[in-house]
Length: 251
Image (cartoon, rainbow, N blue to C red; front, top):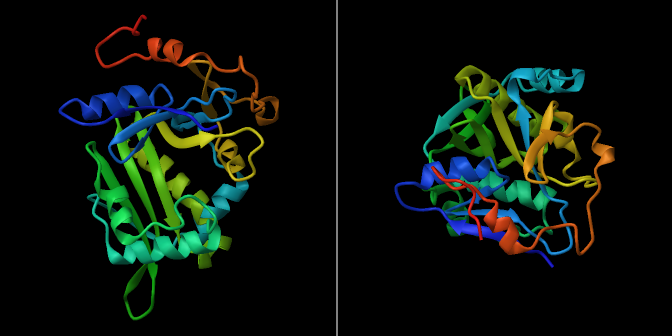
């Protein structure tokens, strides 16, 4: 059974809490921070790219070249009808059986706009003829003290062959490099998951495992632990969480 640790993200210390807990494997969803804590599984591991050491592969460089026509614009976290139309096309083509498949425009707006931290919507537009442009991809991104956290991204499924997903990550690495930020957080990586395997291609990748960040090394060497002793009890996990300007909580 799926289980998570979570905490509300609100008040004047919301940004600091987001920074500190993101460094401990947590992710943001609207005004909540969460980290998987399943009773018999420790498969979900937060992953981040170490920006200074990143070197694109040949296929990643090709993705940059194929999308050279795109123009980036960073905006405030405000949902638009154009974004929602693209979001619906993306879900119907790529994740029609997922948990977000039934989201309506109000839920979409909440996902984008309900953020108590420093967030941006990164839009990518493509030429559409007669001097106009059309939306090709979107990424909701949090700006952390040590990097960029890619909260959720989606793109035009008609351009799937252009490797737009790869391009969005590459561009965020470029933004982080320009801003002097050391990491790009990609969300959770699960060993053996075909849907999440692409994240391991953005080396050097670090994963949050056993309470610390470490190089992923050989992705095949990691296993999705399924055992009653594979995760610590909830009370023990909570006791090891460091909060802003504090030492780990001791039970």
